[in-house]
Length: 96
Image (tube, rainbow, N blue to C red; front, side, top):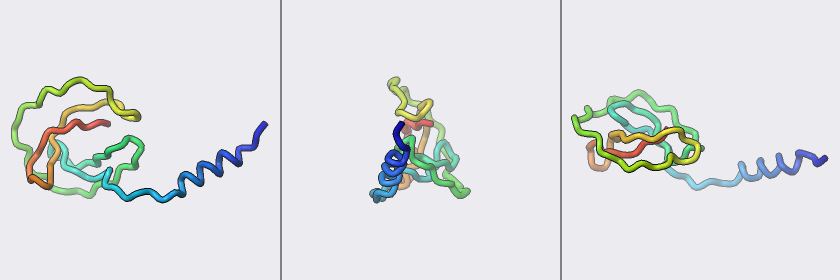
């Protein structure tokens, strides 16, 4: 029987490695409601402060091709996400 010490040491070593800063998780207006949006399922979503989102203009949901959800997510759906650069809502695929 082997000791769990090497495995624990490896996990601690990997966890302590510096990570590149990224804006992979951020609070965004999705369908008129502020919620965390992350690029990867394993990231810890931020706690979003209450915010007033711009009104979602009426539009028709686009037809999106069926795809397999990313690992760690259950389902994906099209949603209107507010793009701060353009100042308007754009359709994006959001996975939970």
